[in-house]
Figure 1 (tube, protein in one colour):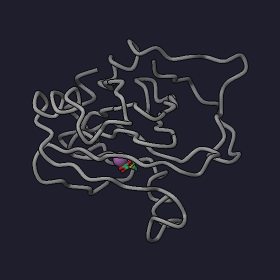
Figure 2 (figure 1 turned 30 degrees about the horizontal axis):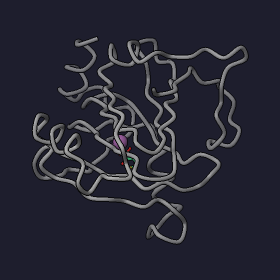
Figure 3 (figure 1 turned 90 degrees about the vertical axis):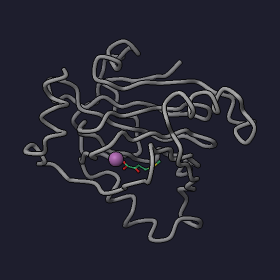
Figure 4 (figure 1 turned 45 degrees about the horizontal axis):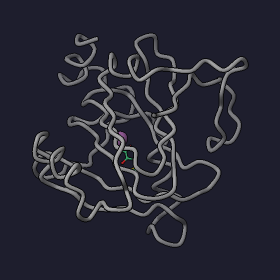
Amino acid sequence: GLEAWFMDSSDEDQRKPHKLNPDQPVSLEQLQKLGVFYWKLNADIYETDPELENIRKDQGYSYMDIISIHKDKLPNYEEKLKMFFEEHLHLDDEIRYILDGQAYFDVRDKEERWIRIAMRKGDLITLPAGIYHRFTLDETNYTKAMRLFVGEPVWKAYNRPADDFDIRKKYVSSL
Ligand code: KMT
Ligand code: NI
């Protein structure tokens, strides 16, 4: 399944893995306690995949689009990557399905430690509304992801500190 670990605190290149020494892995169960959920799918058949269809129906993911994150494909690439890596939250769940390439999602745990989640082709993840998180490409510098949303998408990100939002308080009290 998914690989995740607690991060070191070095300011080195964000695209590097930033594992602790010795490595401190994080299990799917630990992620679930933070409200992070995961499915593994066959990304080669995403256009016709009945498993994806079922998830979308069950979860109400009515909206979807596809974003390619690569310097030649994404307008304002540098600026967007900088924004994605700012610690932020959203008022809704963030749902991403990696169709190609790979990337990292970092989420804060209960004790404010950063957990790095390695997302590879076929990984679908949901980050709960109100969780502090950020996103970066890894050293391969490319991913293609499906963005899913319940209803009309709202992409607005609130950079930390955003502790006074009801959704943040609700999230914190769910832990
Ligand atoms: C976000 O809000 O963190 C993002 O949209 C990340 C980039 S989408 C793969
Ligand atoms: Ni986000």
